[in-house]
Amino acid sequence: MSTISRDQAALTPDRLADELRAEILDGRLPPGARLGEMALAARFAVSRGPIRTALLKLCDAGIVTIVPNSGARVRIITREDARALYQMRAALETEAAMLAASRADAGTAARFRALLDQHGADIAAHPDGAYLQTSADRDFHVVIAQMAGNPLILRGLSHELYPQLSLLRMGHRKVTGRGLQALHEHDRIAAAIADGDAEVAGLLMRRHIRNSWNALAAQLPAPEDAAD
Image (cartoon, rainbow, N blue to C red; front, top):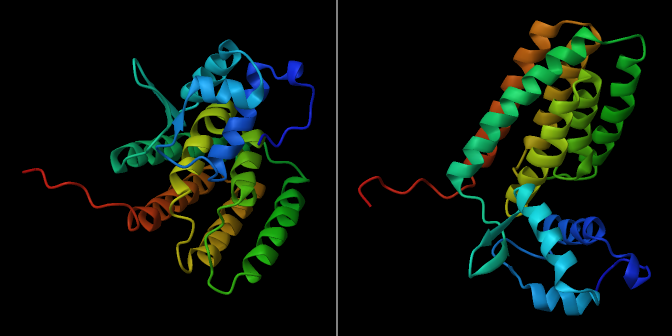
């Protein structure tokens, strides 16, 4: 059943997309799950038009695939797709970190400290050192994108890249020991940004994303043999 409490008539395509996005990104609709228009229309008590529009929005966000004459399904992200996402992430977030450093002010350090102290408490609650896969980790990067002051970078990360990364990570929730290391990397990035050192902030961010990719890639299926 839908988790939205509302008048059915108020279910716009945007709200339908938000509902389905939440179910996809928290695993209730796993990769490969079929998203039939008729079934969804019956479930939400709406016509197929708003459902179709919502699915197109999710397709644009990269978390749903729509195949003509086959319908919509939750996207399955391949290893090649994942590598491309991380390459794009490195480019955008490195630039965001450098721009954020160039715009740092007296309150920047305190803002990061409050966020990272919360992350530290969250990690301490998990003895296995699970990597931060909740919104808290993403918040650190969103804060940097916001600080960068570039709306195109912020939109590219928040509305397009991060939902796809969240879907990718659904099946790879834990990278043992990565939590503490990621927090240490976040600390160093935050310090460089607060110090206004754009060059170091960009370097540390690129290194952080490379480390994140290496940890995740170790869990992904190995590339198929070229001879196959």
